[in-house]
Image (cartoon, rainbow, N blue to C red; front, side, top):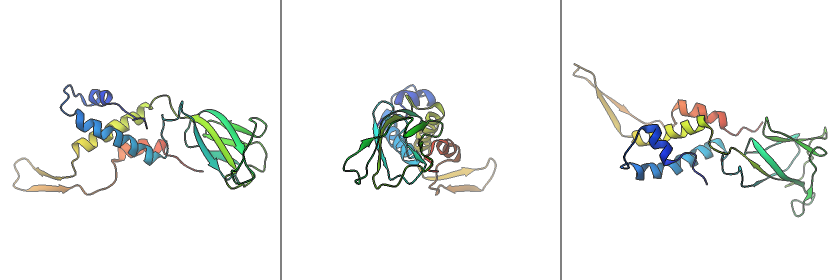
Length: 189
C-alpha cells in the first residue's frame, strides 16, 4: 500500500529542517495513511494503475465501485453459476459507466438481476496522486499524533493561583480533519 504523504512533504509542511524527528515521522506516515484509507473505505492512489476486482450480487440498478473516479473498466462479467464461470458484458449494450457517481449502470430498466457472486468488475480507479485537501488532512493527522501524546495537559492563568488540568480522553479525531475525510468517505447509496 502506498502512503498518502511523504516524509519530505510533512517536513516542508511542519517547517522542519533537521532529521531528528525522521524516525517518528516515518513510523506515523504509514499508520496515518492506513487510518485514512480504512476510515474512507478506499485507497485513493493504489489502484490508479494497478487493477482491482470487485464482485456484486446484483438486484440493483447501479453497482457502486470503491475506487473512484473510475479510470477504466477492464472487464465486466456476469455468472449464472455462483461465480464458477463468467461471461463478458458489453459496454453501451449491457452497462454504461457513470463516473460522476463512481458507478456502473445497467442499460436494462430492470437493472442487474440477482445472481450470487453474479457480477465481476475489474477496473482501475482513484487518483494519480493524493488530492491536495486530503493530503492536508493527512499532514494534520501526523502533526496531531506527534503533538498530542495523550497525556495530562496543565495550564496556569497569568497572575492566577489556580491551575486548570485538561485530561484528553476523546477517541474521536479532530473535527477539521474529519470534515475533509468525510468528503472522500465511501458511501453506498
